[in-house]
Image 1 (cartoon, rainbow, N blue to C red):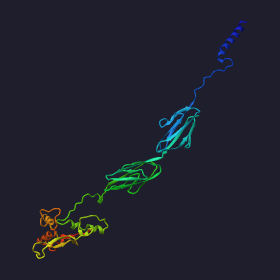
Image 2 (cartoon, helix red, strand yellow):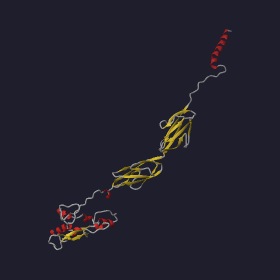
Image 3 (cartoon, helix red, strand yellow):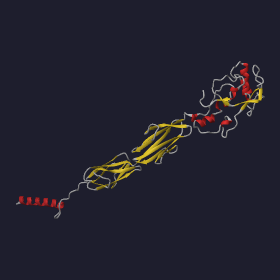
Image 4 (tube, helix red, strand yellow):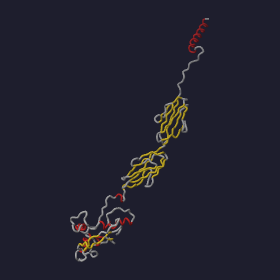
Length: 347
C-alpha cells in the first residue's frame, strides 16, 4: 500500500514539473534560425567607363563590386556610362541592355559592358619649322587646339599647311608619308606633323654675288626682267636696265673714247661719243680692269674720290679702254665690253 502511494506521488510530481513547459494545450517554443544571405558579384568589361549601383544599396561599382543581400529578395542594378562611353549590355545573371533584376536565391554574378562612344584625337607639331594642322570635321586647329573628341567610327581628314619660310615634311604616328592623313577613329589616336624650314629660295635671306672686278651689276643682272618674262616668272619691280622695265625706257650709255685719238694714244674721255648698252654674245671677254682704284673711276670719272649714292656711273667704258690700250689688248681697245650685258643662263 505504501509503495503504491509513493509511485502515485512520484508520477504526480513529474506531471507538475512539465506542466509549466507545455501549459494548457500549448506546444513547445523553438528559437528561429537567423535569415540566410547570398553574395552578388559585379564586374565591368569593355573599352569604356561607367558605374553600376544597386537598389537596395550595397553595390556601387566602381569601388564596391561585391555585396551580400538577404536570400530571396530582388536586387535591381542600374548602369550609368561616363561621358564619352556607352553602356553595351549585361551578361551573367542578366542579359540585354534593359533593366537588370536579380533574385537572390543563391550566389549571383553580373557583368556590365561599357564601350567608348567618343574617342580622342591628339595632334602634335614637331620639327623646327612652323605650320598649322586642321581637321574635317572641325575640332583640331593646331597651333591652338591640338586635342579633340570625335564620335566613335568618325572618319577624320587632317590637313597640314606650312607657314611662309617652312615646309611640311610628313606625318608620324597614326599617319605616315607626306600625302593626305585620313583616320577612322575607333580608338584614341595620335598623329605628329613635321614642319621644317624651307630649303628652297624661300629660306634665303641674303645673297652674296662674287662679281669680276669693275663690272656693273647690270652687266650680270640688268636683263633679269627680260629673263623672267621669257621663262614664265612673275614680274616685279627691279632696278635693272631701263630698256627692260615696264614701261620700257632708253638703254643706258657711257661716254666713250675720242675717236680722233686711236691707239697707241690713251683713251680720252668723250661724252659726245657714247657707247650704248648691248647684249654680249659671249662671256669670254678681255678683262675690264683689274685694279681697285679704277672702280672709283667707274662710279664717277670726274670725282673718283668723292662719289655719292647718286654718282653718274660714267667711267666703265673709259677704264676698260684705258686698260686695253695700256696692257696690249687686241680685241677691244675702246671699252665696248664694259657696257654689255648677259642674259639668262648665258655662258
